[in-house]
Structures are given as structure tokens and as C-alpha cells.
View (spheres, rainbow, N blue to C red):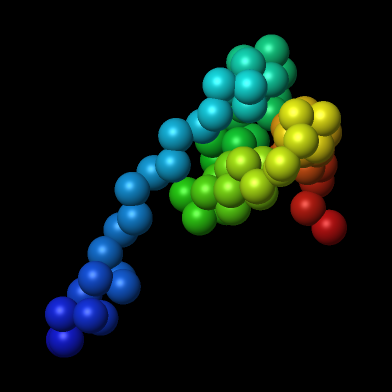
Length: 75
């Protein structure tokens, strides 16, 4: 296997959960359990999406949306 392929397949470091999302998850055990059950790549996508917000209001809405989405049943 080429070195580039090995790097691509190597596990990526876990992205730390930002404090404001941690607080919301701490206050909602159901959401916290659902978030923890997500694959690392899905958790990373949610955190990246949250961090892309430019305005504090947008970030706050995204945190609320993350909590809502992880608790929603998959359809």
C-alpha cells in the first residue's frame, strides 16, 4: 500500500466538542446519549457545521438544531 493511501486511511483525531454544545448536551441526557452514539465522522460533521457559523446567533441556532436532530428518529 502506498504511503499516501495509508495516510488517507489512518484514523483522524477526534474533534473536541465545543463548550456551548457540551452545555446543551449536558442539560439533555437523551441528546447526549444520541450524540455519543453517532459515528466519529458524523459528530465531526456536526461540530464543523456549528463552527462554520460566523455570527453568535447562527452558532446558537445550530447548537439547538444539532440537539434536535440527534434526538429525532431516523426516517
